[in-house]
Amino acid sequence: MRNCALLDLVFSSEPDMIDSTCISVLSKLGKSDHNMLEWEVQLSPVFSVFNKPCLNYREANFTAIRQALRETHWSVLLRGDANEQ
Image 1 (tube, rainbow, N blue to C red):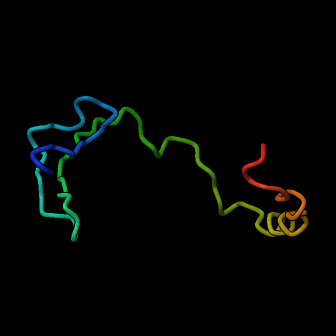
Image 2 (image 1 turned 180 degrees about the vertical axis):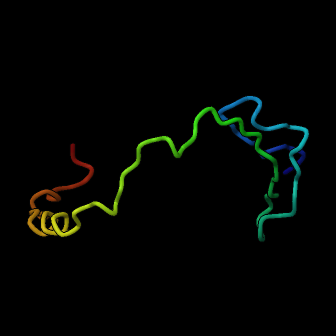
Image 3 (image 1 turned 90 degrees about the vertical axis):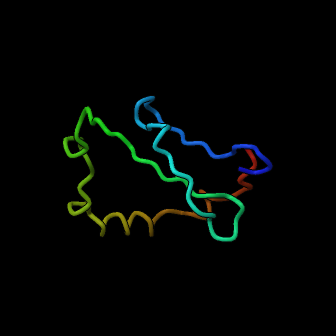
């Protein structure tokens, strides 16, 4: 709290993920005037992250990637001001 105003919030994508009665206010964060919060997250996974496709970096052709990066004309691609559209 700062001057009797509550400034700390916990956001979640699911309404039942956080039980607001179980949020604890801990000590100050370093020399800040903000306190740390602690809470438990209630998870009910609908799917497993292990069933999702992912990149297999072990099979990447790093030699070809390095060669392509060396052959790229970076000065041409990066020419100009980043603020120009």
